[in-house]
Amino acid sequence: MGRIRAVLLAVVFLAAEMPQLLGSPVTGPAFLWSPQHFGSSHHDNKESVDYRTFSPKDLAKLVLSEGGWSNVVCTREKLNDNMDVAVVFVGRKLQTSDISSIKQPDPSLIDILKLSFTTSNFSMAFPYVAIDDQEMLENSLVKGFGENCGQGLGVNRIAYLDSCSLDGGNKKLEGLHSVHDILASRISGKMDLIVLCSGDSKESDRTPSEGEALSNVVDMLKQSGAKYTILYASRPYRTTQYPAHLAVRFLAESPQGQASANSTCDGVCQIKSSLLEGIFVAIVLLIILISGLCCMIGIDTPSRFETPQES
Image (cartoon, rainbow, N blue to C red):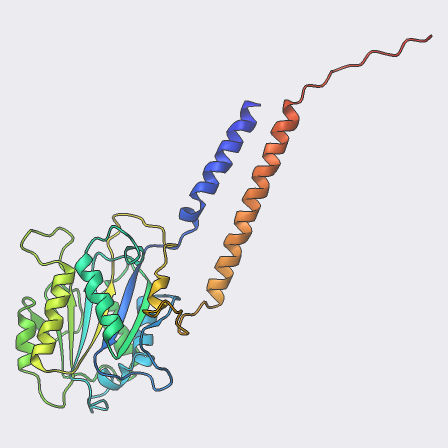
């Protein structure tokens, strides 16, 4: 009887922990936006959300194809007159679940991302970008751009912050204030790619938060008069494990609360949902079975019966 109760408790504990055990690895979101309307001619990419899980290389490929960056970073001839600067900002804190969480690690970052996503003429969101432990996110993105461009990147300069781990950059920036110098020295008709990375996970009181840093970069771009597009992507540190099932579905909703037609659930998404439903039903049936066995074992029945007496 004691063993059966222990098994029952173990099954109940497994059922409670099942969402965390079956959850996806820690992922970070990515946002792409531009005040100017550009991008894929096949879609009206405003507040578009893709809920598939991407690797950094897949994200780079999608940014080029659907995000329209192939026209601005893949050729030295400027095919898109609406762009002067492409900025890649890599964060280190924001996880997918943080966007819908009540307790947010950096509220100013969430505010600038939501504001840019909803007010820009061109905006896309990718809530699930998988973490690559073998390579830094900024390096994966820039290498992905070069590999998918065919003949390599066609930008004039690749400027990167000293906190970035980047191979192939030709202009190192000492700090965020150096972005102003890059913008002031840009050449008309030439495209510049600027890669910025958030600093160490241990920040001092004087170090600006990611939200403040991103807001300062946006302000500098606006003040310079440059036509720009920004890709924000996050590679969160693996300090705290958050369940990935806390999705950011509200990104696909319009301000009136109507669902956007751009939200998708591909074949992998449907398979995962069906699998989770089947596992949940199986756990419930197993609990019922074990409960029934416990009840049957608890019924006291006589071990032997008296023989009927002959009259």
